[in-house]
Length: 120
Image (tube, rainbow, N blue to C red; front, side, top):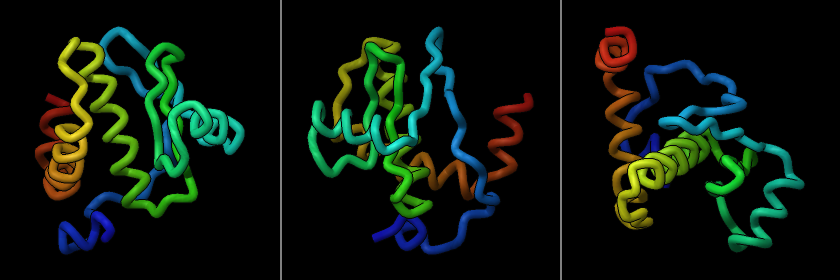
């Protein structure tokens, strides 16, 4: 089931390009979308990944063949992992997996809130 199906409506945001990097705390993570890096990461972390955080390399790896909603969910999912690592919170996969679609839905459904938070 897609995130759009879970939320029951289209995103109010236009589709944007995947950023080349994201900053979390004091760290800047490069976002890799190439097949070679994805294949290498899948060998190290397991097949069938939509994405992965490679913390020591400050790298987020994405499978760009995923659907748009899955890709957005994956980016936020990996960013949440990096946040938890940065604050030294127990990086619980179940917690991240549960939080991601809800937080993504809040951000997508509330553009005025996002504008307020990012431009306050």
